[in-house]
Length: 277
Ligand SMILES: NC(=O)c1ccc[n+]([C@@H]2O[C@H](COP(=O)([O-])OP(=O)(O)OC[C@H]3O[C@@H](n4cnc5c(N)ncnc54)[C@H](OP(=O)(O)O)[C@@H]3O)[C@@H](O)[C@H]2O)c1
Image (tube, rainbow, N blue to C red):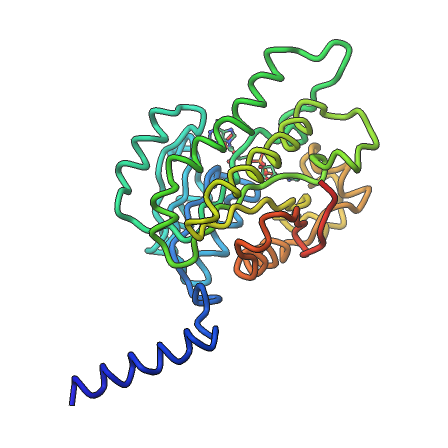
């Protein structure tokens, strides 16, 4: 009887495969995600939303002992574990990849970066060369190093996705101001290097995607009536009403789920809109 059932399953699978109906991955199925820079902001929200959807989450933070909100998530979700990682410490990155050797990672979420708009924007006149180098190292070199270090983990997974968090400001077509030139240059370079890396690894079924997350209102500041309760670094964005809603994180998880190798030539925004490179 067992042999008959196995033969029947084999024939069904063969028929579906022949008809082109076998999905490349099980859409919406929880897998394993590694999120960098999960101590705060978007990374913390990604870790929370993936965990809430039943994913196994490997959340990295530079200083786990200070990442109180992430620690609280780890208590709430047993499948969420925290790893210490400075993404610019390449030996640490390689050691983490070695530690997780054999662990399939469905989504490598390259989120952690220097976000100038959070830590202070740089400016021309003259642009500090050391700051430019630091931003490029963190936002470009470290991102590619992570992608290469974890390639085997991603290639061994079901969903096979490397997702880099870019920014609308990385679109060369859309340049309208001179604000934060190093940050924006880093995101334009990130787009190029990930676009090229996508070509390199697509034959292995790995989709390298870049998404502009928008400025997500992860703390629901837009709901506050008293603006003085909002930290200063977010106030201008609240006044301009340019924040994306908290639900944008969930939208991005849905978007990541939908995108595949055939989308590596597009630069998506959090809501699915395609941006000019
Ligand atoms: N929010 C926006 O307006 C916006 C818009 C477009 C794109 N993005 C992109 O979205 C991503 C997340 O942005 P965010 O707003 O959530 O930024 P954020 O609040 O400033 O958080 C940045 C995260 O990256 C981590 N990080 C920075 N340097 C690191 C390093 N060397 N090693 C390890 N971790 C490091 C930080 O860790 P620590 O806590 O240790 O500092 C933090 O967890 C970034 O790639 C950003 O460029 C954001």
